[in-house]
Length: 236
Ligand SMILES: NC(=O)C1=CN([C@@H]2O[C@H](COP(=O)(O)OP(=O)(O)OC[C@H]3O[C@@H](n4cnc5c(N)ncnc54)[C@H](O)[C@@H]3O)[C@@H](O)[C@H]2O)C=CC1
Ligand SMILES: O=C(O)C1=N[C@H](C(=O)O)C[C@H](O)C1
Image (cartoon, rainbow, N blue to C red):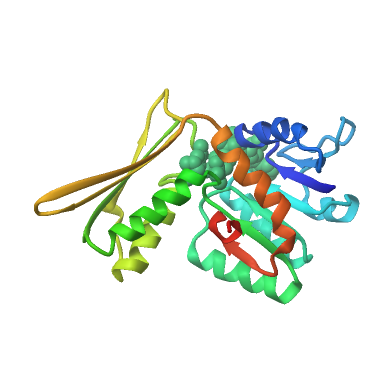
């Protein structure tokens, strides 16, 4: 049985995950983390990450909150040698390098993944393939109006893949953000040369698109011996 603590369990992704894991016999929610502490409910809800470590017996800390909180929680958990699954977006290269070092020094492990859907991993792979043949890329990300960060973690991830592949920095003008009612999450990569265009599109029509990836990460994270960035590190 994997005992998990979910940070942001009252948010859109956190509450979705809490429902989703009810169907999983080997995963149990033992505590939550939110903006307000509430210790007398069905499960205890904390606001203080150190208190979670001191009072709760758990295997994996899962986070769908906001960047600043997730960064702090990841650091505290990794320093305590814990396993983490972080879906919260906004982590930059410096954050990741620092957290990887902390994990190594303290026996912590984990996955930080800006997108848990298989389709998003594939659009990133296809984009990388395109970079072998094309030089011109535009990334457009479309999300619901309540999304707090911009550009999306997935768009940044794809841009970084291209930066590495093309060995040049995509300027921010190459990543475009659209916020519209009726949209959940969509990523579009436009590719061209002088004579042709190619469009790659991935769309999440439901939060169920993230479910398999998150469950897989919770099950497999303990097998890692480091902190990795991207769900593809856990796929065969
Ligand atoms: N990796 C993935 O596949 C996905 C990642 N996300 C990311 O997950 C994050 C959350 O997204 P949503 O659930 O849509 O947002 P949301 O706004 O609905 O939920 C955020 C939750 O974080 C909690 N929170 C905020 N500040 C806090 C603090 N200081 N202490 C404790 N809890 C705090 C809020 O109470 C809220 O419950 C975003 O960064 C989003 O980009 C979203 C969907 C999929
Ligand atoms: O906030 C969201 O909803 C999503 N956030 C992630 C991101 O920033 O890439 C993943 C997905 O696009 C949904």
